[in-house]
Amino acid sequence: MTGVRSVPWASILLILAVWILSHLFFSAQIFLLPLSVLSAFLLSAAAVIHGVRWLLRREPERLARLKGALLQVLLAAVAVAGVVLGSRHLFRRVERTMQPVIDAAEAFHAKTGGYPRSAEEMVPAYLLRIPMCPGNGKRPMYLHKQPGDSPFPGFAVGRDGYSITCYTVVFWKYTYDSEKRRWFGWD
Image 1 (spheres, rainbow, N blue to C red):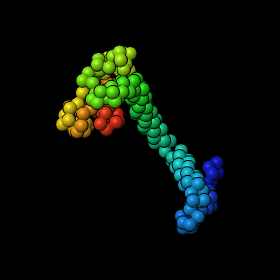
Image 2 (cartoon, rainbow, N blue to C red):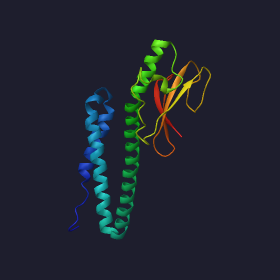
Image 3 (cartoon, rainbow, N blue to C red):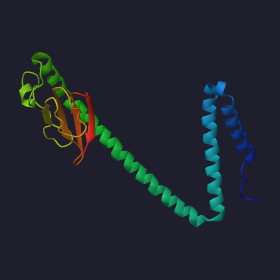
Image 4 (cartoon, helix red, strand yellow):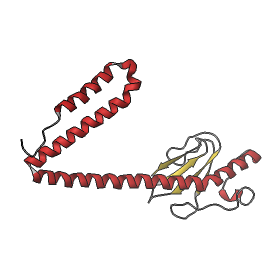
């Protein structure tokens, strides 16, 4: 063949042999794991390069369609990653913004033996002002829970407690449950 390099089969077989041997010697696997990962990556890269070269020789129009499809998949992946990372960023902002309300409710509970019935009961003794939700700029929903209450999905039924809810993205809510001591999202 002129102008087109042939596949480096010797290199590919050597990489494959090292990869297989690294799995056979399981006692030394901790030392060979990086080599195994590297050889698997190199083998995959060699296969992709060979496939692209083969497509270039055989069917250039098919390669153009493949490039277009790969670009669409890449753009969709970037969009999904942006939505997920943006949501996580917003959730962290809600957690940071509402932490003073949680601290004030816990301080109220430590002093009085019960949680406040409304967020306003904590102002100004425990909280200077009630912060606004970062997602929509509105006040959070503070709900006092009685034993046995379960006002929304995901809440634990049990002892006295409270929940703080902020709307984040459209109808998506992000809620802190005092009984579980954790945040969760729900719709």
